[in-house]
Image 1 (cartoon, one colour):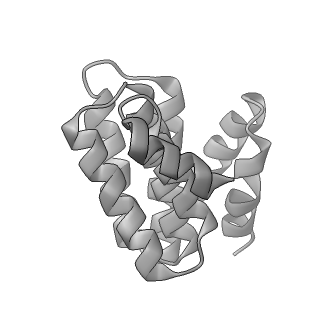
Image 2: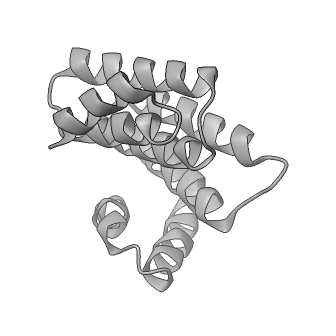
Length: 145
């Protein structure tokens, strides 16, 4: 299904949903080279111009894909890109996913400091309060370490 959606985006123009689709697809592929190519394509689409929601969803999904692949440094690049995009108009949703990405990358890189546990607890509560249950297991796993 995602391959068909991606093909349609490429064929008809990607400004409305292309980066969002590419970001979602990057979470579904197992091949690191394919994931890298998809993320590069998504960044190129955003650079050419895309509707604003694409920036939010693409970077959120890129963070997820890269954390799952064990690439904490790559995830942090997308955390920074998400924060840069919303810097002039902060959004609680993007702030939450940026904080989550940064904290999980810190755990993965073993650079988490003493305050990281409290930050993970805060993030977990915010995710639960917002009904974002699919994003809890990774936080729970980090809290269990």
